Length: 130
Figure (cartoon, one colour):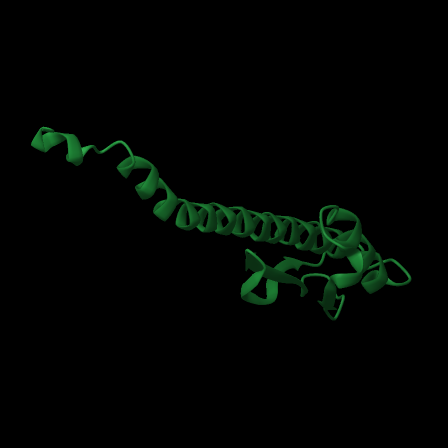
Protein backbone atom coordinates (compact mmCIF):
# COMPACT_ATOMS: atom_id res chain seq x y z
CA UNK A 1 0.00 0.00 0.00
CA UNK A 2 1.30 3.46 -0.99
CA UNK A 3 1.44 6.35 1.35
CA UNK A 4 -1.01 9.13 0.91
CA UNK A 5 1.75 11.74 0.27
CA UNK A 6 3.22 9.84 -2.68
CA UNK A 7 0.54 11.20 -5.02
CA UNK A 8 1.10 14.77 -3.88
CA UNK A 9 4.48 15.30 -5.50
CA UNK A 10 5.04 18.90 -6.62
CA UNK A 11 7.96 18.20 -8.93
CA UNK A 12 6.13 19.31 -12.09
CA UNK A 13 4.38 22.31 -10.61
CA UNK A 14 7.30 24.69 -11.09
CA UNK A 15 7.66 23.80 -14.77
CA UNK A 16 3.94 24.25 -15.34
CA UNK A 17 3.94 27.68 -13.69
CA UNK A 18 7.02 28.68 -15.67
CA UNK A 19 5.37 27.56 -18.93
CA UNK A 20 2.33 29.70 -18.12
CA UNK A 21 4.31 32.83 -17.20
CA UNK A 22 7.03 32.61 -19.88
CA UNK A 23 4.95 34.03 -22.80
CA UNK A 24 3.96 37.05 -20.72
CA UNK A 25 7.55 37.67 -19.67
CA UNK A 26 8.77 37.41 -23.29
CA UNK A 27 6.11 39.85 -24.50
CA UNK A 28 7.03 42.28 -21.72
CA UNK A 29 10.73 42.00 -22.56
CA UNK A 30 10.17 42.60 -26.29
CA UNK A 31 7.88 45.54 -25.48
CA UNK A 32 10.59 47.11 -23.34
CA UNK A 33 13.14 46.63 -26.11
CA UNK A 34 10.86 48.21 -28.73
CA UNK A 35 10.07 51.13 -26.43
CA UNK A 36 13.81 51.60 -25.84
CA UNK A 37 14.47 51.77 -29.58
CA UNK A 38 11.69 54.35 -30.04
CA UNK A 39 12.98 56.41 -27.10
CA UNK A 40 16.53 56.30 -28.49
CA UNK A 41 15.19 57.61 -31.82
CA UNK A 42 13.39 60.41 -29.97
CA UNK A 43 16.59 61.42 -28.17
CA UNK A 44 18.47 61.42 -31.50
CA UNK A 45 15.72 63.49 -33.13
CA UNK A 46 15.74 66.04 -30.30
CA UNK A 47 19.53 66.35 -30.45
CA UNK A 48 19.49 66.76 -34.24
CA UNK A 49 16.85 69.50 -34.04
CA UNK A 50 18.83 71.29 -31.33
CA UNK A 51 22.00 71.17 -33.47
CA UNK A 52 20.04 72.46 -36.47
CA UNK A 53 18.55 75.33 -34.47
CA UNK A 54 21.98 76.35 -33.22
CA UNK A 55 23.30 76.32 -36.79
CA UNK A 56 20.28 78.33 -37.96
CA UNK A 57 20.88 80.95 -35.28
CA UNK A 58 24.29 81.78 -36.75
CA UNK A 59 23.50 81.24 -40.46
CA UNK A 60 21.57 84.38 -41.40
CA UNK A 61 24.43 85.54 -43.68
CA UNK A 62 24.39 82.31 -45.68
CA UNK A 63 22.92 82.30 -49.21
CA UNK A 64 20.45 79.58 -48.19
CA UNK A 65 20.12 79.48 -44.38
CA UNK A 66 17.19 77.04 -44.53
CA UNK A 67 19.20 74.59 -46.63
CA UNK A 68 22.19 74.86 -44.29
CA UNK A 69 19.92 74.19 -41.31
CA UNK A 70 18.19 71.20 -42.93
CA UNK A 71 21.57 69.73 -43.87
CA UNK A 72 22.79 70.15 -40.28
CA UNK A 73 19.73 68.38 -38.87
CA UNK A 74 20.26 65.47 -41.28
CA UNK A 75 23.98 65.29 -40.40
CA UNK A 76 23.32 65.38 -36.65
CA UNK A 77 20.67 62.64 -36.82
CA UNK A 78 23.18 59.87 -37.45
CA UNK A 79 20.96 57.18 -35.87
CA UNK A 80 17.96 58.22 -37.98
CA UNK A 81 17.12 57.43 -41.58
CA UNK A 82 17.58 60.80 -43.30
CA UNK A 83 14.88 60.16 -45.92
CA UNK A 84 12.26 59.63 -43.17
CA UNK A 85 12.97 62.97 -41.48
CA UNK A 86 10.50 65.77 -42.16
CA UNK A 87 12.18 69.09 -41.31
CA UNK A 88 10.66 72.57 -41.14
CA UNK A 89 12.57 75.82 -40.56
CA UNK A 90 10.80 79.13 -40.05
CA UNK A 91 12.27 82.57 -39.40
CA UNK A 92 12.43 86.11 -40.76
CA UNK A 93 16.25 85.87 -40.40
CA UNK A 94 16.48 89.31 -38.79
CA UNK A 95 18.91 89.68 -35.85
CA UNK A 96 17.10 89.17 -32.55
CA UNK A 97 14.14 87.35 -34.12
CA UNK A 98 13.51 83.70 -33.40
CA UNK A 99 14.22 80.78 -35.68
CA UNK A 100 12.16 77.65 -35.09
CA UNK A 101 13.38 74.27 -36.26
CA UNK A 102 10.92 71.35 -36.18
CA UNK A 103 11.33 67.78 -37.29
CA UNK A 104 9.33 64.59 -37.16
CA UNK A 105 10.30 60.96 -37.52
CA UNK A 106 8.18 57.80 -37.78
CA UNK A 107 8.06 55.21 -35.02
CA UNK A 108 6.44 51.84 -34.65
CA UNK A 109 6.25 49.66 -31.54
CA UNK A 110 5.71 45.99 -32.38
CA UNK A 111 5.52 43.04 -30.04
CA UNK A 112 5.83 39.60 -31.63
CA UNK A 113 4.92 41.00 -35.03
CA UNK A 114 1.81 42.84 -33.82
CA UNK A 115 1.89 46.64 -34.10
CA UNK A 116 0.91 48.13 -30.76
CA UNK A 117 1.44 51.80 -31.61
CA UNK A 118 2.77 53.77 -34.57
CA UNK A 119 2.92 57.37 -35.65
CA UNK A 120 5.38 60.25 -35.91
CA UNK A 121 7.39 61.71 -33.07
CA UNK A 122 7.97 65.47 -33.14
CA UNK A 123 10.62 67.79 -31.76
CA UNK A 124 10.88 71.59 -31.95
CA UNK A 125 13.62 73.96 -30.83
CA UNK A 126 13.64 77.75 -30.92
CA UNK A 127 16.79 79.91 -30.96
CA UNK A 128 17.38 83.64 -31.33
CA UNK A 129 19.00 84.72 -34.61
CA UNK A 130 22.39 86.30 -34.01
